[in-house]
Length: 482
Image (cartoon, rainbow, N blue to C red; front, side, top):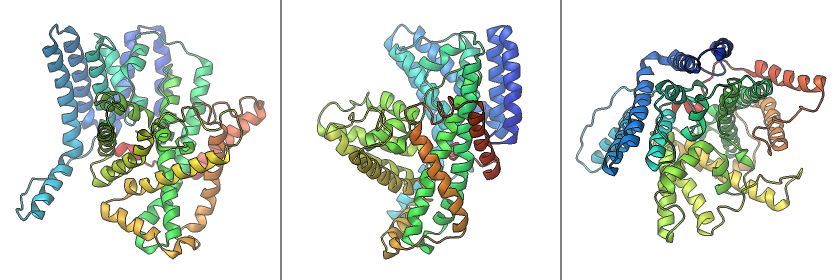
């Protein structure tokens, strides 16, 4: 079920109403209803994959108890390993089997000894990259002694399958979200209004910005050799705002829906395109995944401690792993390696903690130096997104080769370029609003709050009208395929 679908527009009010009616009943009943609602939400796409969610849930619950109840370190390690093997096994089989099989076949064909590893007709279950990582972090945290294992299977099931963030995050930690299922939630009007406001902004990002940028990005990326360098630059920019509007829009809607139900999810995006270096960008982009790799891969490997080669190794490990997490394609691996190369100078020079606060905090405009820093970081990010968007390495290289042409200074020309003249101003307005609200958890958190009833509601209605006017049907979220 998509957040931007009519189905969800019917589903959410029903869940909201029943959920708060049950608030007067037993807490376990209310949590059980959330589990049921979450399974309906996920099964609406394909009920056959509900079994994977259940297996992952049961794995996390039982291995968590096994780790905590084991007196010997060896037994604790056994249960942790079981959680890792089962969850990564499910993820690896459905997401990476064909990738590695095809790579294996191609390698032996290149060496002149053709071998055939069979390919399977597998459908990638939506959200599997997210809920398996959430379960893994739960097991690891128990092993480390950071949290206690829960004996409440219903609460754990609700935590694991919580429908707002089930299929595309944020990847929540049990330390934050699980305790919220242990206590009775009270309806808070202010929290609910704030949730609705964030949902509205998320829908604007997704429907108005992402889906409409996608039309032009898809057109240009479909045949890069047919377009001028200036058009290719514009295509990369369209995808840059498509993926940001799409994924951060999903996160805003997920967080907003959770707030309607009395839950607080972590912020997943913090205005990353205003970053002054690549380290700041990765602190602000897909925060739940970046911090997951930091806490469960990077730091255990040694982090930034140790010698230069150790630092280089650790940086490449997490970025290559992040790239592969995003998709079973060599383009994602190259995208990860490219970001590792961007990141290396910052870490090796000890500048990776330079920009912890948002740019131009307390000021309307950035300094000239900050403008240059933002521009360079943004340009590097746009270039890397070409690999992320491309269908194959040859596709990416063809696209990049087309950028190095005298036509870079020509006027962009592509089918539908006149329609783009409507979307480009919307992107600019979107960026201005994001800049204005960059010191808050989402751009319009405080925008319009003190305008008075007429001004405030006029602004909200304007966003709603744009969403309705620019909708392109039930467009899938990009991260559903990861």
